[in-house]
Picture 1 (cartoon, one colour):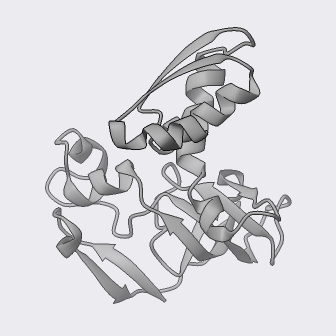
Picture 2 (picture 1 turned 90 degrees about the horizontal axis):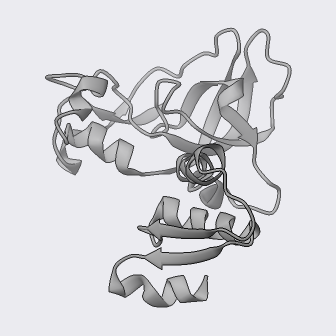
Amino acid sequence: MKAIVIERYGTDEALGLKEVPTPRPKTGEVLVRVLAASVNDWDWAMIQGSPFTARLLYGLLRPRVKIPGCDIAGRVEAVGNGVETLRTGDEVYGDLCQAGFGAFAEYVCAPAGALGRKPAGMTFEQAAAIPQAGMLAVQGLVDVGGICAGQKVLLNGAGGGVGTIALQLAKLYEVEVTAVDKEGKLEMLRTM
């Protein structure tokens, strides 16, 4: 299979398209044919090795992870032993940051619990843009923030990936939202 591989820290020139072995699912994992993947801050930190604290996670001198990429959407191609929640052919999406990364490849193995079924009305590209940003928005507003109807919420960076999802989530909770971001994002935020 083809994969985007990183062997040293840098910018996009540190990435290369290479032929690598197709992974096989272990117990509790599924093999996903990646049909869409998104790029987020975690991916760029891994590729650049910056900020320097990222190297504590990804490798001090060179990246430990060879195939970057967190967020995927695709189709289950094979199911490992012990997987009962997903079947071959299921359309899925998920965040692989705690499952070894690997989204920038034709295929990736992931724990079944790291994936959810892709909503039928959503494209693979749309689904791949949600997992990490969506989870951060839910964690910030719901899990930690304890959002409740009638509250006032300030969203700093409201026009980014996490911010736009947080804004929509806050609207579902019927809270008063103050959105802060760059001037160029004003019309988009007003529309939302």
